[in-house]
Image (cartoon, rainbow, N blue to C red; front, side, top):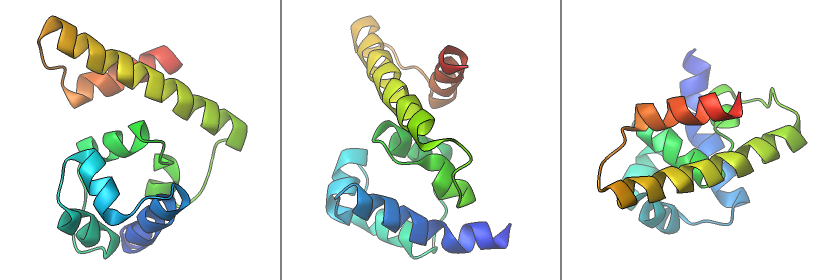
Length: 116
């Protein structure tokens, strides 16, 4: 398990670079500080579930970030991410429309339900 935490930061940086984002750009997208991104990439801090959800919504391969491998077929993984982004956007719209907050956990449960 320690190796997962030790290399999470390297994988986060790798995914960020693959998506052509700087630390500043990613921080701005996630509405957090650049220092937080820097600490995650240096394995000095551990991100929470909301952070991972937000990365997934931006197209990051969260399975790779967590486990360091791709258990899913690349085409299927891309399709899942595409659907996930659409559902996440729809949930955000629904939140605004209903003027309410849907918890991150509820969003994840809804997305998992719709995709499985």
